[in-house]
Structure formats: structure tokens, C-alpha cells
Image 1 (cartoon, rainbow, N blue to C red):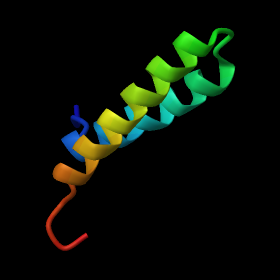
Image 2: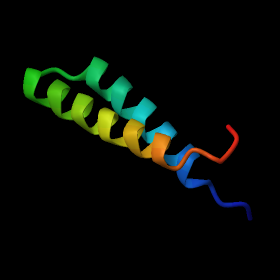
Image 3: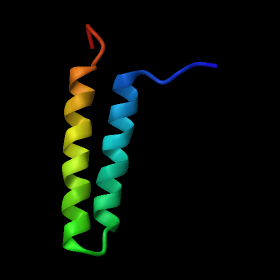
Length: 52
């Protein structure tokens, strides 16, 4: 079984949170999902493979 890299995990989670923000009913939920998406995107950059 192959495991997912940290970079791929955080990239996927950022995309999922961006989608959740778009589907959010309340402004508070939308902002929370946007904040999480930004955090995950930043972590994806930190774990980007060398040479990518």
C-alpha cells in the first residue's frame, strides 16, 4: 500500500476546504473554511518536493 506524501495531502486538503467554503451557508463557516484552505496551502508549499 502506498502512502500519500505530505505535499499531496496538504494540497488535497486545501482544495477540499476551498470547495467547502464555496458550499458554506453562513459567512462564519465560509471564512473558517477559507482560513483552513490557506493554512493547508501554506503547508503544501513547505512540504513541496525538492526540485518541483
